[in-house]
Length: 272
Length: 278
Image (cartoon, rainbow over all chains, first blue to last red; front, side, top):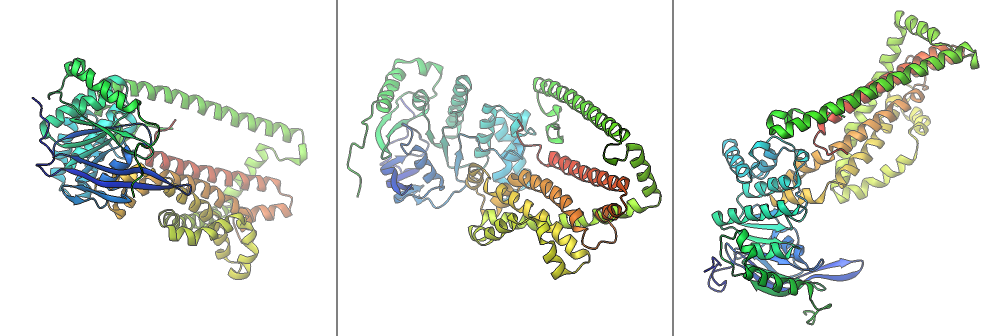
């Protein structure tokens, strides 16, 4: 019994990469950050991306966010090709990216103000999002007064405030200590079990990738491409017990092997 | 550096954080007191050395008493105030015009590649010319009234501030701009809500160095046939070997410059409390 969304063939995917390549000019040489990626993420699905540095994880995410354009292929959300950034695709950055001159409350209100949400509604939404991440008591603090975990919770509240259809998380817990990290993972899943928001989540941490995901996408570098996709059949809600289950260990080993025992170079000819 | 602000009062944070903040504040206050005491001590030692030097008749130096008496005399007959007001007016006017021009130009250069390409050669070129070297040209084109003096001071303040503002805009963290964009902000909102606040610390540094440049250009600017002003007074005093008056003018310039710098520093601490200072 799993809560895995049904096959993407039947339902239109939330996020779709079709034949996506992204080439950068690196000192005159073409660097293929992403080569010929096809991937679909279903509505309400959590997909984690793992892989060595330079495998194009962040490039894929930035293309969904609209911060980067693919050199070839299309990236679409809800069937519409992505054109530029927009509030329906929330992004959580590893470096928190809080506006240091705004208080926690003002940071969370930022997207709502841009959208022209009236004051009263804005205040209600901000209060609700701050409660969700447990930062209500720190609403008037400046980011510099917060710990790393609190900063990231503020960033998550800020992303939730504009009610995005998909959440793009780029190693959001990478800078946190191990305990805080586990706590944040559990909170993320709790929130997900209530709102079933589609999440694309980048991480370096194999345990994190397995614990959070419905599917783990393992990527390979030079050029950045999908190496393996590992479905995670662990039931939801996941708890500390899930982490200790033999099934978790098996999946963890499988993903670990896929990440750390990759062919050195491209195992298929470049596209085109 | 003061870190307490209206936005960050202890009542808004849980008790543990607040006692910690309180302890930190107390520690900082004691450090500030210690520094202030040392500053005072240093000033007194300087004064004593000066008195000693004049007592020993080194280089015909006037002593603190003599300079003090001269200062009182110049204050009593109103001369000092007239000179100080004239100089202050030039500095403030030049500084204000220079900075007000520098901020938009710096923003343009930082934000638009075209503006940067067109303006940067001029800014970089004129930066290498000391503003004082423009004085002969300023006299030829602008005469000997207030205009050339204010012009030279304006130029000095502008060139310093414009570079600083430009640096501020180009060094705005890319991640913050992206964060604003993914929250729905378009260019105008990104500029107003991210670029301007993020570059405020740079602008304030530019204003402080610009103010320094304005004061340092003042005396030379007042060599241009001024009727009054601290620079002019020193010129006059030099002719009559009136060292006391020169000292009074110098100290006045120093004190006014210091006061204005402190004012900007205070403004800086108010506007940029959000910065993480190490």
